[in-house]
Image (cartoon, rainbow, N blue to C red; front, side):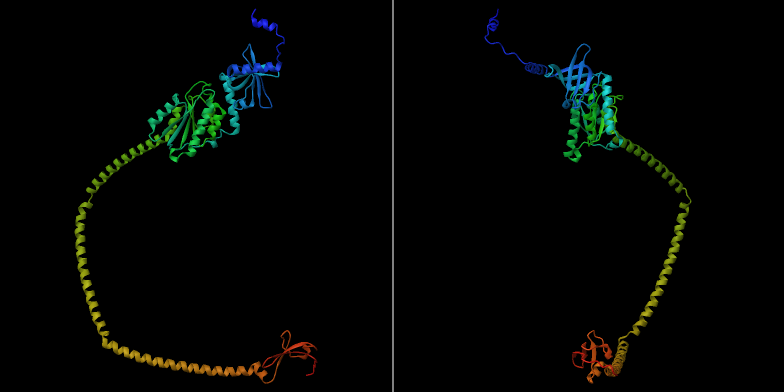
Length: 464
């Protein structure tokens, strides 16, 4: 027998037993340490969404089962609603629910497994975002007609980027391509794609205008429904819709549809097709210019042939035989006209010279001096007559004014006052002509030839 066992038989004090809580706590610590991250694939049964937001369900594989809890901080990142019978792949850590002593898995990530399960989750997310209006056509923006810089959100190791690069390199010479690398499948792919789209928009807010992205191509090559699942995640859809840069979704093959296709501004069936959409305008412009150039060359050829034909017709026209004779006739007419013009000008010059002599005689200095003295004498007489007429008029007006002043002075009240009369007024300024207009003790004003008086009435006598 081992010494340690013998010693334990003779221990004076027994070892302290553990409480159930302590044992459960130790088991919990051991489980969480040794099973900190495990992957389980099973079927969901007994799914319950609690009012608190937590999910509780059981994972069942046909012969065994395991309790599972997915708390709200974790299930808020899961963009579909699990249900009974759904086959899922779960990542989490083992722990113990101490009050009941039951061990369980605390779910941190949950993905549907199988085409049927993925389709159900796809339809749930699609219905939710459709109800919110993220697929509305009026939200979709037109792609720039002539993009200068294109950002490609995809894996640097996949074929998608090389397909885009090959198409754009072959079909356009003005588009610059920038790879924004990210994972396109796996558990963290959705978050990485979301961050890549946000990074491109953040770059545009600080970059120069010539360096900003005009359009984003977000996608990857084909694969299974599970491989393409990252482009069905709600976070990716919301990042595309919130992007200020127009987005082309290019995921999988022609028959593959993802949530990103519905929410993007434009869907391309493949990454190569997305590159063709970007290069489409440049191809159209080149084709248009080429066609117009051909049309212009054909038109020039036609015009030259037509001009040659017109020239030959003119050369054979009778106008070229008649024209020299017409020129001779016009020359004779011009010479006759020149002779007539010279004769007319000479005659006019003679008339003007004769008239000049006549005017010269009329305006000789002696005649002008005689006429000037005559005009001065006449002007002096007119001035004398004017002064006499003015003086007579003034004297006549002064005499009339004196007569009017004398008449006015005779009629003036002031003249009457100078003879000893006066004017009596009431306090209101009314001239008194009748004694009945005042009473005893009324105040009156008396206007004299020199000065005024103010008096009170002591007696009123109405006798005439």
